[in-house]
Image (tube, rainbow, N blue to C red):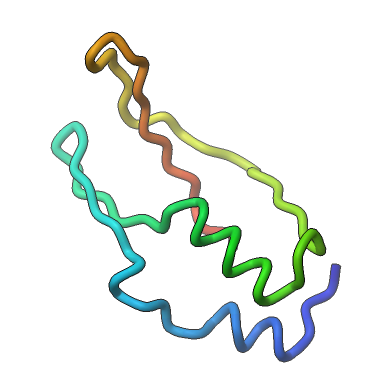
Length: 80
C-alpha cells in the first residue's frame, strides 16, 4: 500500500496528550497508545477495514503472575 500525501500528513500529525498513557514496570516508565485508539486512528485515516499491520519484532521486557493472571509488557521498536 502506498501512502498518499494526505495519509502521511495525518500520520505525522501531533497526537493529543490525553491519549498518551503512561505506566511503570520493572523500574521503567513507559508511554504508549492504547490499541483501540491506534485502530480507530487508522480507520479514520485509511477507512474501515482498509488497512493491515505487521509486527516485525518485539521484546518482552517484563512478565510475571499478578493475582493469578499472566501479565507481560512488550516493546516494539519504531520502524526505520
